[in-house]
Image (cartoon, rainbow, N blue to C red; front, top):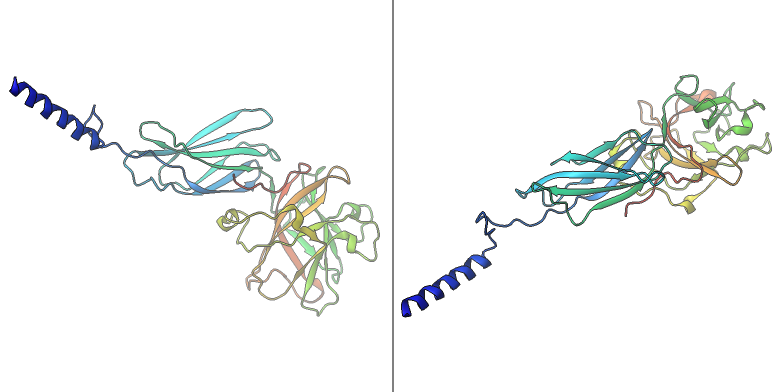
Length: 309
């Protein structure tokens, strides 16, 4: 009878020991912690697509870390689509999207057993049109007011589906212009990107409001732009942007222009391409100009981007 009691006590102690070691009773292997989501989810708008970047999950070093799951929901249709992204990846491009639609995007981690992380990274973002050529398939250049052919730019002509450059004094088109390049004379080193409403010789032109926020980048897909907070609505208060013929560290700017009606706005992000010497102002003397690539949101009242959640 005593031997039975000793055996039961030993079995009970063994059970308690196994219970506190954190082992799986079925496989006798340690139970790994659940996987956690990536962090710092950011995005860049492109034409019909959104480029995502994130900081990889802290649990990637665990043996049970599997993949990332990216999901995006179209709020208009309610349809959600998903994609699996390999471990170690920190970027993914969502294709086949509709410009102007603010997609709800979520990224989770998934374990090798198919268990999704309880936490997630989330952001709301809208793709936008992208242009590096005008409607005539030419590099986008705007010449200063001192030029023989001073020009004005319409960021987006819906009839031609692209940016349009025309002469500043073309009264058949300048009512639709969004900015011109002002130079006081041929020798003053500084130039200004100006709202058409600041033209003293042509009254009644559009008002373009530029954000007071600007950045530096090598192109519009530069990862550094994905890490930056887009301008707030209150920052769109300037009617001009001062430029210098010297090397500048700011060449990415934001603007709001008139939308379908006078009460609507559309948003543009544009980059001034630097020349070989690193300046945003090209040429010399009377014929100085800026060269532009841009991302344009042609849906009314859609901000360039929304912040992550």
